[in-house]
Image 1: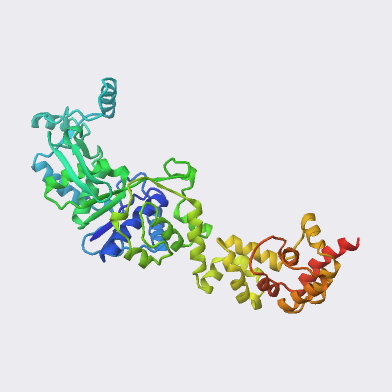
Image 2 (image 1 turned 30 degrees about the vertical axis):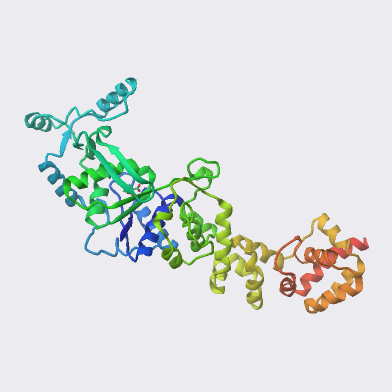
Length: 464
Ligand code: GLU
């Protein structure tokens, strides 16, 4: 099996096309096959080299390396469509020799009028074939006059294109519903339909997984490949991803580009565990390594109903991934600002105590500030701590250097407090929060001077 990801470098990759890349990658992994990266940069105006660099970095960050593609030519390159003009020219020629394509001299205005008339007559918009049968003399004359032209594929009439979609099942398209379509633009550049199909065939792609927005392109591509006697891959069109509001996933309802997720602190394995389940079902509900995700991926488990993006699910996998980081990576991940707050003698204890409570690096920063910078209580917190009473607070004060268990025993004995009445004032005193990491661990992270300063705020209030 050979799959591919064929992005157009006109922007950063976002969740939608990252999922397309992921499923293609996983399908190849599952079959022990190869994953190809091909850059579809035929739109010279919108394609940018910086987006090519970015998408390569993003794929590698996610952990989706390609076995074939830029930097890994396996004899099928170049892998930039902008460098394959000579190859496309050869196939235009073949189609021309077979009489399968013809030049169309319609101007954009003419095509617009055609569409309007069809709309008025209640007909679907379709090229009406008006230049399909110009004589060689007419063609020569128009060319001599310098009239610009596109190349159109001559769609056979009265046939049916049938294929088994790996995700959506059997698909049938009547060729009479498909107008002769453009395979080379007015400036001579190849149209998407054309070079995408030619490259899949020439690069030996056996399975194409892509978004369902491409479903109607497929019969056109099959017709061309058939005409050229080139191998036709198996196609699978993946369901759409919807946002929480039910509209297609976009920036407005939760989609982000992969760079942005990386800078927000998302872990690549969290993104993979989440996305591999977005419209694909795994028997195994647990966290999986990228290798396991690959081994257990099944194209037939791709659903054809729209998948719904769910931020809470993504955060669940993020937590799972953070728990699995090694200490060194976690320490790196939390960022320089946080690292600078943690005394070096406390580094190991900090990691152990705080990691279970971090979903994003920002959480570690919040806890580092609580533990290692002066903590000011609001009046409500102050009152809640003071309510524990002088005996309680004095016991904490005198045992400020004791171990957590000795301090707890002393407080219990002095105040008689237990359960919530014992633990809540202590937690508030240490963190000004109602919940958080294990208190025994926090106690040893907070410097005794800092603890006395916190007690001081509350005890002053009591006395005053
Ligand atoms: N360049 C196309 C896109 O980004 C590729 C479509 C395909 O996967 O066939 O939509």
